[in-house]
Amino acid sequence: MSDGTPDYLELPVGRFLDLVASGEPAPGGGSAAAVSVALAAGLSSMAARLSTKQLTDSAELARRAEGLRERVAPLARADAAAYGLVLSAQRAGGPDGRVRAALSEAADVPLAVAEAGTEVADIAARLAIDGNPNLKGDAICALMLADAGVRAAATLVEINLGGIEDGRPRRARQLVEASASARRSVEGEV
Image (tube, rainbow, N blue to C red; front, side, top):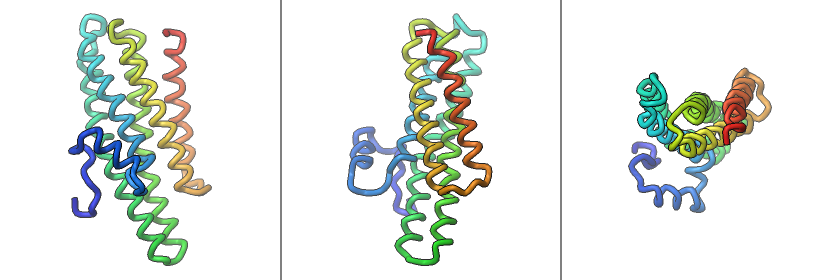
């Protein structure tokens, strides 16, 4: 890749985990949140494809989940690249405004992760309640991964913006609540 950030989608899982655990600042929390949501979308897609007897709209749910997976998976790399710009601004020692601007831009990636994660959580909750009962555990796992990804990503939005209330932190909090609502809808199902 031109900015030196590897394409995490091309790496074996073990290599990605090694990179996360390394002494490098990226991939970090935002990338991990994106991967969590992508895994949740993948599990939801699988559970939907195998719920044709239970749900008349299973093909549509699978299509939506697959689209979300394709949308969020590249955000793991995008988050690392955005954080790289923050580090460059910090290293340059320029005015604080440059660092704040880089952090503000970096907040957009986890916000996109949280938005996708909330949609995945809704799909996974539906599958856990109405889908193939043999895949209930997979759907619940997808829901929990999506919810964790949403909460982590929303936290990063808040941290990156450092108290700037420009609408994005409020949106992030709304997404956390929507994802939590999906999770609560399933809690009685276990």
